[in-house]
Image (cartoon, rainbow, N blue to C red; front, side, top):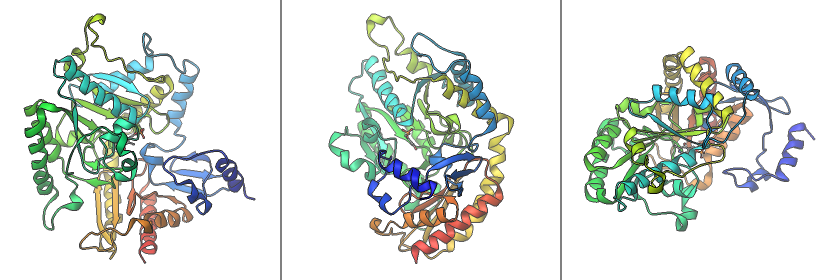
Length: 449
Ligand SMILES: *Cc1c(COP(=O)(O)O)cnc(C)c1O
């Protein structure tokens, strides 16, 4: 038995894996990873895989990055963790100061949690609680876009709309107001992204006009609905949304958990719309893909609505055990160091152009409905009918076939349904981009034959 097989057996005897029908592993090998270095993951049999999806969108500067490693090791000998209520520490203070500097003006307060879903929960609670503290308890509903994804906890699922993840639990969820997404894959032929996004905004405007008195906040994933199949839209939607939220007295929550930290071509996606949210949720790449941590940034107006004598009972009494973990803070500080010292946003531009150029020919593939891109995210959507953009029956699991082929070629891809996407760490080279695109194209060929 190979080493891979030995580890796989031990694993399958006791683990239950995330987002997996475990029976699949009767036929799909589980891949035990022994080590990672830069763009590569290496299994116990010595096979290497190019990580084209940043290990689920978290890793941006490669595995075992020397700078991040060094900073975590140094922190480890100083302080690993301390309760953040009543206590504080140097890395969390420095991190908060730096986040405040690099995010849009007005986002001056950092509230930490330990994963993306918890960050969404706390943003929803904070918005609701703000209105309560303002004497407006009727503002307790949330508006979300169709096809959005905000995490797996019950509140986050309630404002989500990817039925694969939420439908089963429908009975447990609170009732959010769903507005059709500006998703530009669904635009009419001949319409630009901007035109489509603008016309879809009318539905949002109408909802806010009619129901703003009962609405606490609108929550959106800026520019890319990632888990919903890397569906993209134009920044003009966010600009209009900001104006409308101001007009109707509704909070705006930007979930930049997946798109923050350079993914869309700017440090934060909202910069492209010059729109500042009331709550900005960040996680995933925040620690360079090393440790779980999330942060919700908000402004002074919100903060002041909770600031009072204890006996007034207006405080935000929300916490997680690992809030503001010192090792995660060190990893986040190291990550921000690299953004600065290596001028990552500028350096990503030619990489994004390379991705675009390499993948352009795939648009002509007879079973590809669209190749779309925003910054360092490129998606290729397979379609049963290229021109009508109809999907294959989901039971055919064509994306899975692409994934299996890619793994045999030493590339880690993990399509979302029929959407094959490339979302690499920023340390990817042009040669590696071309290799990933080539393997994706071959996989699509085989999966659609
Ligand atoms: C991943 C993700 C989340 C949830 O984060 P977890 O850390 O997995 O709980 C929330 N929102 C978006 C947009 C995400 O991509």
